[in-house]
Length: 99
Image (cartoon, rainbow, N blue to C red; front, top):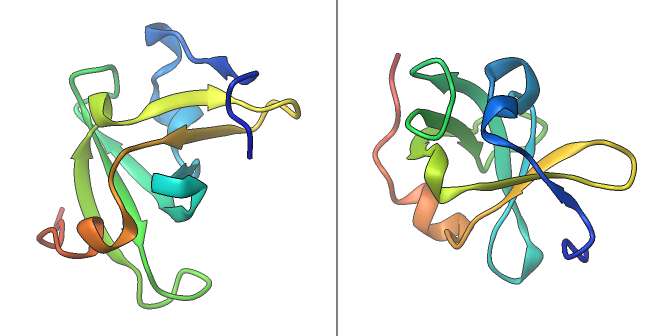
């Protein structure tokens, strides 16, 4: 997916309602997970809990990363997604997030 023409989200759009469920793309444009939920009321200072691995949501491991490590944008259809420099393997090695 070519992200160059996608519209970056503004800081005011970084809310749980907008970000939850967003697909996360890592290095080489591989899907690395989906955002399960947001901590600290969103915004650039919060963290995103990403479900990594698993199949159809079963067996996925939740990990927390700073929202600032994710670049959120909308594609041509208006769907929100994010790009990060983390790989799926790096995320899988992080400690499991527990609420």
